[in-house]
Image (cartoon, rainbow over all chains, first blue to last red; front, side, top):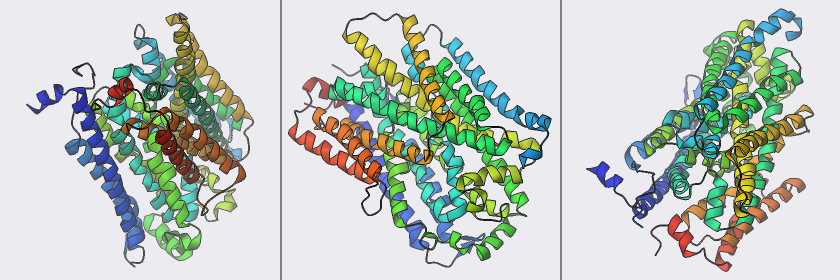
Length: 92
Length: 499
């Protein structure tokens, strides 16, 4: 049913969907920047080491990467919707 | 080190690299053959919009990851430590940002406008041939700078590792990339980029394995580093890694990269939104793996190299020297495929966009406007010739490399971002964005950025991208406020909700 709805979307609906997805992406960026700040600089004063690596270095590198993967997953699999890119169904 | 190798051993060492280059050319010939009969301009410059998710991810990552990611970057990590990885990891945003923000919008518009290039879209949005010409000029100019840096970086690495001359390296991989891009166009670029990205990842894993082995294992290297180089474990490297570098990097290699024309054009090239979604995820995984993997290897190289970066002739020599010292001779030829793949995949991606700027954005548009008939055979010949000629020019510049080539690379990166960031972002998402704003932003911002670079003028010691991007925003807003709005017909195409 959802697929049919998407296939029958007109141009205006597609563009507003795409705009919303771009905003989600921008918000995800803001979230990642905040995580990056806290994960790295925020924990740099802690004297904790795992596998000889300071906590800030792990959280600020692998941690940021994993969060970026999570963000990409949420964006692409949950928030983003499939649309027909054809452009012939704009109803004009 | 390599001087003691026999001529035969040196030659055998090159076999994997020569084979790899042969495969690249074979792919392009195959692609050309497969694309025969299809619309040439669309297939040559944008691969007929047929890319799937995996190839889209790999080509976006490979074009984005340059030879400096594999040579200069890890060399800096060797010197600076984990702060460098913390800074470089901001690049994990690059793929999901460009595809998430521009991917679908550009794809929808390209299909509506029958656009093949980013400049096509800019021309249609702002209804300005002058702006399109400036955009094409900026692309060709800055891309030539970036490509020269890739040629030089790759050839220097080749010479340092194999013992062959700089020129021999340039001929081996430089000519190959020009040939395969000229023959196969965008589709070949995408497929060869995919091979390159895979080889980059294999190269990183191999190098990491042998660095750990040569250094006596992870435990041994890290225990020693904690005692001898405690500064590597501090985010500011005891003052050598100021906050300004972190801030600048977020702009230069993170946020602003979404507007790089070589990245945005990938939004025109994919087949469907499933592929785009897949590419966002795969691309983010791959770009993070490469970034963290190669930079961490740079730090671990302390287990192989006992001196400072200066002892080995600077940070750019850290990875080449590590490859030579840590890897068995029979694998050295294989190991340098990774960094050279990073070099050629960036060159090919830029070369095809630069060629499209000249042929599609300037020549074909001029011909259409003047009612000149251009046969498809002529378009084919001119497109391939333009690609080959631009490649040849950059190749010739690289034969006598200018000084400070790495600065030229970063200069070009910042210039492209200054020129295109607001023009694309505001142009595609803000109705009030207009021709005057885009013109002022692109021309004024780029000129101010170049002037700041030339004079060395900085604010708070930040890279000049901050000046360029701020000035271009201000100019864009001023122009959009005072200039005439875009016409209704254009707004209906770009903002169908417009009433």
